[in-house]
Length: 301
View 1 (cartoon, rainbow, N blue to C red):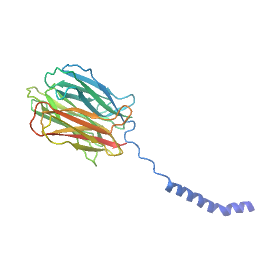
View 2: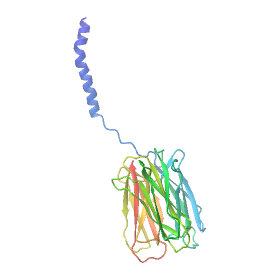
View 3: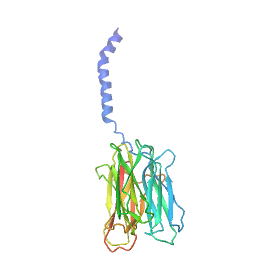
View 4: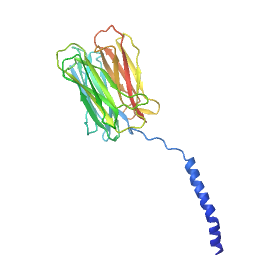
């Protein structure tokens, strides 16, 4: 009985002591790091044959088990003599994209050897990922524009476009995701001008890659100098602690006389991208001042 009494006597204080230790452990335990919004993010690429053909195309496909969050491209050796016609992610309104096809035409006959590179920004499966599109009117007007908007409740991770029926006679001037440094993007606007007068009926398609809300998703931008140089390049980067899921660009003041030759996310097959480089040439000699803006879509790393 004496042993039992001692047990009872010390039972309550011991419980208080244990509870105190639990509370202390709860207070002192370090906070766990925030989860990555897009785990497994990498950038892969594919390059077409290099020759002097009028049209070049290639497709960059995500590694098995990954999905496409964003796109990019690079024209190699053309220096303003070729125009991108297609930057087309696959997928659909109910299907996650996994690849992007890039196609480019010579703006005018060009004897040089050139090629095109497609860049795919890929991640482990992202909840709710789909690709939606919007098409402008089809006619022979000099300018066409379309805005692809994500379904309600989704955000924009990446972008794409396609020019239909113009085969090298149209140039995308605006490829602009909305949003801001404190606001997640939800739509992309594509605007294209005729690079040379054409009587063809043509249109522009905007593609939006959309997902359920992602942690820390924002859109940043960097504007280059405005002058009359033939070439300019500008880099938009993600804030510290964020990674690049997609991108966009905008040419200002050149209205069809400038072509974006490089739309290149950094990163690699083993490294997440964090910046995008937008480089543009004059397609024909242009005396006016113009500039290039690069847009980066970024989420928590």
